[in-house]
Amino acid sequence: MKTLIQKNSIDTFQKLNETLSLFTESDLNKIPYEGSWTAGQVVQHIILADSGFPQLFAGKTEKTTRKPDEKVKDIDALFLNFNLKMDAPVFLIPEKKEYNKNDLNLKLLKIESELLECAENYDLTLTSLDFQLPGFDHFTFYEWIDFALVHTQRHTNQLNKIFKSLNNL
Image (tube, rainbow, N blue to C red):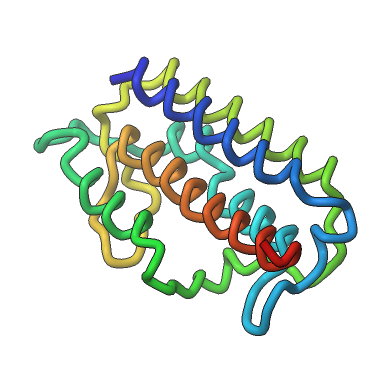
């Protein structure tokens, strides 16, 4: 379980970093089409959503009375459905501002490192009681890391679409 989630973490963030590296500093802050965030805003949204796992994992937990990966199928089905348009909760909406690629990269590196450390140091079968996603019951630590990864994969796909739009590909 730990080895798989760690490999998925590394692969997910590698793909995100490869995609982000395609953007010039100026393209990072261009709106590609009406109703879209800039690439910088998308990355900031990922940062907002995927931050804080060490604090969450250090919080209140309980022993899980179901399969620890039971909700993974539902999480993946929802977030990897690229035809489904979702609205971010208010607290995850990125600020409209000029983003710096290096700053974003440093924050992403920190998040990747934290997710890997959490996967290594915590019992991933425990259920976290301190926070839950709207529409879902409490997640196990394993499900939380899966959420972070599929959420990142969803927005890596969005960044690819933004890049293609900006470059008429």
